[in-house]
Image (cartoon, rainbow, N blue to C red; front, side, top):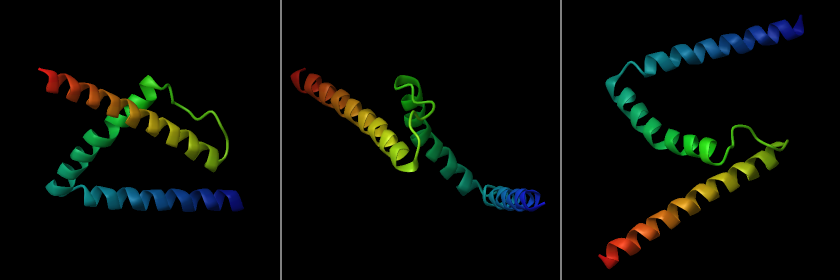
Length: 94
Protein backbone atom coordinates (compact mmCIF):
# COMPACT_ATOMS: atom_id res chain seq x y z
CA UNK A 1 0.00 0.00 0.00
CA UNK A 2 2.85 2.35 0.82
CA UNK A 3 4.46 1.86 -2.61
CA UNK A 4 1.12 2.47 -4.31
CA UNK A 5 0.66 5.75 -2.40
CA UNK A 6 4.17 6.84 -3.36
CA UNK A 7 3.47 6.13 -7.03
CA UNK A 8 0.25 8.15 -6.87
CA UNK A 9 2.07 11.04 -5.24
CA UNK A 10 4.79 11.00 -7.91
CA UNK A 11 2.21 10.86 -10.69
CA UNK A 12 0.29 13.79 -9.26
CA UNK A 13 3.50 15.81 -8.99
CA UNK A 14 4.33 15.02 -12.59
CA UNK A 15 0.82 15.98 -13.68
CA UNK A 16 1.15 19.30 -11.84
CA UNK A 17 4.45 20.11 -13.52
CA UNK A 18 3.03 19.15 -16.91
CA UNK A 19 0.08 21.47 -16.40
CA UNK A 20 2.42 24.21 -15.23
CA UNK A 21 4.64 23.72 -18.29
CA UNK A 22 1.67 23.91 -20.67
CA UNK A 23 0.63 27.22 -19.12
CA UNK A 24 4.17 28.56 -19.36
CA UNK A 25 4.58 27.50 -23.00
CA UNK A 26 1.32 29.24 -24.00
CA UNK A 27 3.12 32.54 -24.47
CA UNK A 28 4.88 33.19 -27.82
CA UNK A 29 8.03 34.45 -26.05
CA UNK A 30 8.41 31.16 -24.16
CA UNK A 31 7.96 29.13 -27.36
CA UNK A 32 10.58 31.21 -29.17
CA UNK A 33 13.05 30.80 -26.33
CA UNK A 34 12.39 27.04 -26.19
CA UNK A 35 12.98 26.68 -29.94
CA UNK A 36 16.26 28.57 -29.66
CA UNK A 37 17.35 26.37 -26.74
CA UNK A 38 16.62 23.17 -28.61
CA UNK A 39 18.74 24.24 -31.59
CA UNK A 40 21.73 24.92 -29.36
CA UNK A 41 21.63 22.00 -26.92
CA UNK A 42 20.15 19.17 -28.96
CA UNK A 43 22.79 19.36 -31.68
CA UNK A 44 25.58 18.68 -29.20
CA UNK A 45 23.68 15.90 -27.47
CA UNK A 46 22.90 14.26 -30.81
CA UNK A 47 26.56 14.52 -31.85
CA UNK A 48 27.74 12.90 -28.62
CA UNK A 49 25.19 10.12 -29.05
CA UNK A 50 25.97 9.40 -32.69
CA UNK A 51 29.72 10.04 -33.02
CA UNK A 52 30.87 8.88 -29.59
CA UNK A 53 28.27 6.14 -29.27
CA UNK A 54 27.24 7.34 -25.82
CA UNK A 55 23.66 6.17 -25.82
CA UNK A 56 23.95 4.75 -22.33
CA UNK A 57 26.55 5.04 -19.64
CA UNK A 58 29.08 2.25 -19.18
CA UNK A 59 29.58 2.73 -15.45
CA UNK A 60 27.49 2.83 -12.28
CA UNK A 61 27.32 5.54 -9.68
CA UNK A 62 26.66 9.24 -10.01
CA UNK A 63 30.30 10.32 -9.72
CA UNK A 64 31.43 7.86 -12.40
CA UNK A 65 28.58 8.82 -14.74
CA UNK A 66 29.41 12.50 -14.29
CA UNK A 67 33.04 11.76 -15.12
CA UNK A 68 32.07 9.82 -18.25
CA UNK A 69 29.84 12.69 -19.38
CA UNK A 70 32.63 15.16 -18.63
CA UNK A 71 34.99 13.19 -20.87
CA UNK A 72 32.38 13.10 -23.64
CA UNK A 73 31.86 16.88 -23.43
CA UNK A 74 35.62 17.44 -23.32
CA UNK A 75 36.02 15.32 -26.46
CA UNK A 76 33.30 17.28 -28.24
CA UNK A 77 34.84 20.63 -27.26
CA UNK A 78 38.35 19.52 -28.24
CA UNK A 79 37.25 18.31 -31.66
CA UNK A 80 35.25 21.50 -32.19
CA UNK A 81 38.29 23.60 -31.20
CA UNK A 82 40.56 21.65 -33.60
CA UNK A 83 38.06 22.12 -36.43
CA UNK A 84 37.82 25.87 -35.74
CA UNK A 85 41.61 26.26 -35.65
CA UNK A 86 41.93 24.37 -38.91
CA UNK A 87 39.33 26.68 -40.46
CA UNK A 88 41.15 29.78 -39.17
CA UNK A 89 44.48 28.53 -40.52
CA UNK A 90 43.08 27.95 -44.02
CA UNK A 91 41.26 31.31 -43.97
CA UNK A 92 44.45 33.12 -43.00
CA UNK A 93 46.45 31.47 -45.82
CA UNK A 94 43.99 32.35 -48.60
